[in-house]
Amino acid sequence: MNETFPVVANSYLYAVLGLMFAVYFLETIADTLNNTHLSLKLPEEFKGVYDEKKYDDAIAYQLTNSRFSTIQRTAMLIVTADFIIYGGFDRVDQLVRRFGWSSIPTGLAFFGVLALLQACVSLPFSVYYTFVIEDRFGFNRTTWQTFVGDIVKDAVLSVLLGAPILALIIAFFEHAGPLGWLWSWIGFTAIQLLLSFLAPAVIMPLFNKFEPLPKGALTDAIEQFARSQNFKIQGIYQMDSSKRSSKSNAFFTGFGRFRKLVLFDTLIEKQTPEELVAVVAHEIGHFKLKHIPQTIGLSIVTTGILFLVVGVVMNNPALFAAFGMHHLSAYASLLFAVFLIGPVMRLLSFLPNGLSRKFEFEADAYAARTYGKPETLVSALKKLSVDNLSNLTPHWLKVKLDYTHPPVMQRIEALRAGERA
Image (cartoon, rainbow, N blue to C red):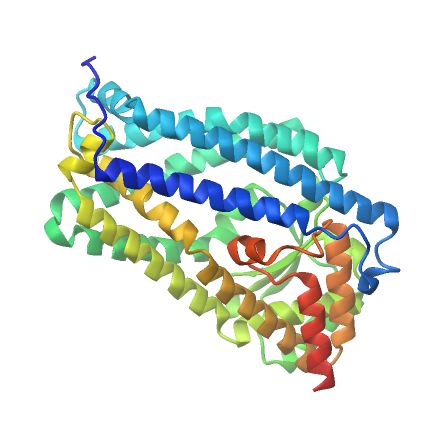
């Protein structure tokens, strides 16, 4: 193997490291402020819902997660920065180039080795979080067999789906000239939309079991509300989420007449039929208010920006020198562009998160207006917060940076204000 090139301390290196540290400090500050903002006194709104012991557990859960996140964040920053500074990417590149393959299989091997290295670093954190933290607070129901099985399934899907997509993108950038970024964007978007149709039928059942919800009062109530909103559902399903966690949720999969409603079995256990209909009404609100296409459109635009940046920095000698690389390549350009644009998007995450929180308020208002039982939705939100040990008093910076849903107290206040209006 050839000797590794020295990393050149140029503007690209300073930009990459500077952005990494900026994200690190912003996230750490947000977590610290969030911890100091925790209310040790149970808010009046939740008295009778949270008991004192459960609320103490919620405080402890938030603090434990914050400490764990800080440790993991620090470790990943150190490992990544050292990997860059000491020419780790070039070492991997030289290793895979020794096989003498063409650029596309070499690029796939390059990303494969990096993915394996990342998995080795992140796996201990995943194990500790699942089997220590989540177990300590009563959430974990994952067996070692399920945990290992999920890792194997993820790896197989990465090879079967991720590798062809990556190969196509590399080919576009190598052979489509200056418009490589545009063709990559179009191709990736088309595949992404296709997978959104296939995932509910092909991918999701690999990880969870989906069974039709038995006919009864609950299915009748949901179907009646859906008909009242002229909203077609192909079926109502129960997902065995309890095989991994006691946390609960609900969501729709598919589009148009192929839409399916999925309720976590843990949600069905803990909510009344009226509360479940209120939750479903909220989810239907996202569709009726056109939130789904807007979210997809934002994702497509974001992906386009990423591919445009890749096109701009494609085979840039100064950028490759910053990573100590011997050889220019389309596949490494993809990765280095992510190092540049990824932290920027993280720093600007308050924009899409703010839009998402706006959508949640609107879906709540839709549910309250159409179902006509805002207090039922309030009750459902309270139960979800207690079941998931949610933070009732998060700091505003943490909310803007990480929350795609508004804090529950704000959602309750908005529902009550709408009821009074």
